[in-house]
Image (cartoon, rainbow, N blue to C red; front, side):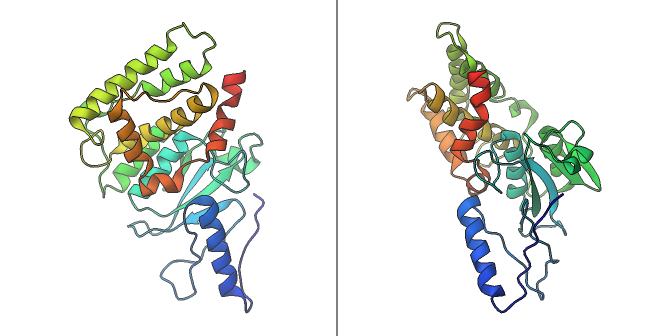
Length: 272
């Protein structure tokens, strides 16, 4: 893997570090902190496509995770909602992680060696690379149980059909084929559920189901707004308030894709 090491060692090290931190914060939505020699953290090299995010947690070292790279901006997180789900889980559990940005249009050999199917996200847990956001989220919950994010089984399927019906409507070329109504039916069911049980799926606190559904609703809002000039109707106020509650979480703001990446990411499905 080709990398560019940034190791300020001259008289301007402090100012260079500040400039780097400011640049990363402006472009990525979080601050990259370079540990000092006397820090409690181990020293980590900053690479061109590896971004370390530090947080206080029980994990001694950052978890390595491969995620989709931006299609529009270099060295920036891309638009995969499943990758965001994993990042959200680590953010909410205050786990440090090291993002490895992968260009899925030109997958590097180092990535294919650890992920033969060439899919993201994949995360390294106990020296083993684990694929699939469902499996990853469950593994993180088991390995790092505090704070707990599990959703009770009877609530885990809330909103689970929204993503597939959104894709059907987005790809549809026939206004009368029923795909819009299918999506509205699923959103209406979520609206009724949140009205009674909200503000989140498991009540007052965010849970794993929210971290899965939130990125998908973010894609829905951006992609349908761009390609179909469509938005969640005002008749579903609890869906709208739910989306606002998720989208304004600090963890969500730090891990969300650029709108232009979401638009670019869905273009092949819409145009194809």
